[in-house]
Image 1 (cartoon, rainbow, N blue to C red):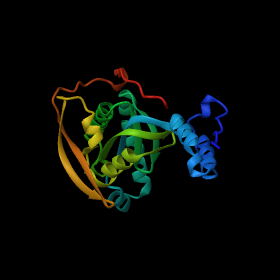
Image 2 (image 1 turned 30 degrees about the vertical axis):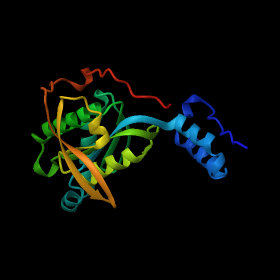
Image 3 (image 1 turned 45 degrees about the vertical axis):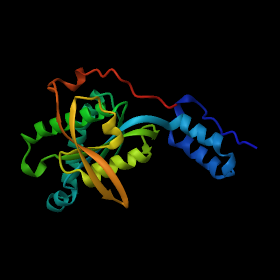
Image 4 (image 1 turned 180 degrees about the vertical axis):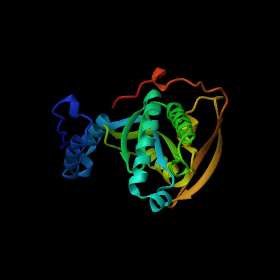
Length: 235
């Protein structure tokens, strides 16, 4: 007998963690061969084909050892002040912030890349007036593909995992690394990226390091940008 999953009480909760937990609890109590309807409900509510941007602050251990955790927390706050307008100005949505990491989703990898570049530009401008002990640097990882997106709470999926590894573990300060899927979905003739290969956590990871744009990026207030591509809704 096929098991019909419980529906969310209203549209406002259709994408929240509570609804996901209820579905997962039902799935754990359902024979594996009857779990198809529950899996379909989870995919319908949460799976979106998105580009994922992971920003990671650089120098945590060194800065906290020299200046203390409050100093670094203030730096994280300042990084977020630069990154959020860059993300939102390029059509993105901040999903969560954990310690010195910021996670956002976009409709396309190009939007994620442009947001990362705008963040680096904003931080570079800040650094011209900041003392050396408050210099702000980030590394970035970008993925693209079907991902479980829990509204303003969390992200799950293979491209999320790869973007985290690239942004947090592999990329250097002010470096942007894209997964193979994200790089392959960039528009042709606009960006130059160099292919790189890495081994991490027992897996081979192909990536592409952003090198330069093949066009002149305009200097304009992020608030005036109006991206034409909107984020995909849950299926």
